[in-house]
Length: 123
Image (tube, rainbow, N blue to C red; front, side):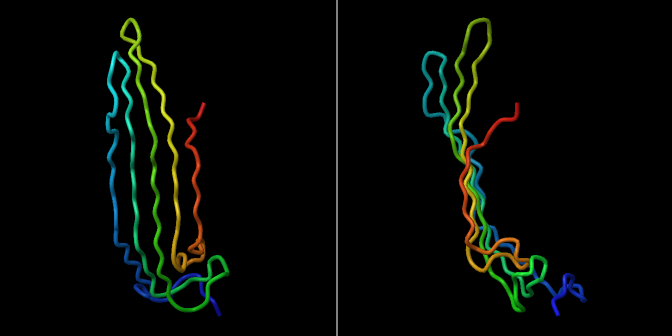
């Protein structure tokens, strides 16, 4: 019988070990005549393990799970100085995320997900 919640506190041990956590913000690559161009990068990754699987999604069997997760957000931004102390600003960013390994202990991820998409500013 699969159980959704462990009966004892501490039965499930989740040990995230952050591999990479970088936030480089913006690195200026061009500055001329009021036009500035920046490259932006942010990356996070983790290795995780659970001593017990849970039947939350119905696709896990008894045992443990080890998996990795990560994302990278990258792109470019520009600022053009205009007249009367005004500026024109624009940015284009992509975000990529993935999971590897067994997938999480609840079965929400299976360990083979990966996706890249463009970030859109709400209007």
